[in-house]
Length: 302
Image (tube, rainbow, N blue to C red):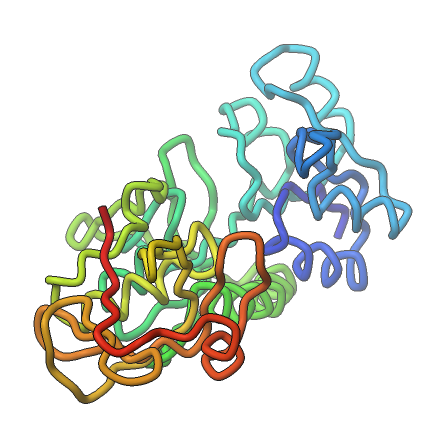
């Protein structure tokens, strides 16, 4: 099938690779390069980097609302567009241009977690499962009918990064199946009941309040790892907590009980991966060798 691909971050790359291997990708659309790193030099998105390695033409308009951008898109003559974490709203002329419309790969079980951060929000909310939906796009935010859906269990120690990688591969596999069976798929309208919105993650959500129950703090750490990374102060130094598990133990909220097991409002969590400022992430044993916590140490967040 003759396709346009629209995506920007790491999550989208396996999908691009799968489509390139099985279909004709006539153009790749992604977000423009932006300043990044210490030198603040323009850095292309992961999708642009991979598309150029594959020899595919790349466009990164700042808007798709101009007549010129819409005419250029339509002139590609694509049968369909595949969209995954692209980063721009598609106006109606863009949605209407491909013969078979625009298909979106969304990392949730719609209508739960429409919007920007469905993987983070599923873990933060303690959802037992999530999945991938292949959706026929329309003007509303993730409101289109679902063509195909697959569920997956969220593991008890799974982080956003872990789940991100699994869902990315699942999306690549599912979109190939959807494109192969497109004539036979029946669009299923999303129900009105059960709609939730996955708001963008705010930095203010990352500070840990140790008076909360261990189950909530466990979800916060896993649901914000690796970015932006839940954090606390230990020995006066800001430390990101990136992996954890629920643990036995009780104590004053924030009290370090043993190793990197920290008491919460009820219960405790054991930190298995942590990162000091300016350092790389370290497993618990290595972290404590370079950052011993004397008896009576306490984690707190201003």
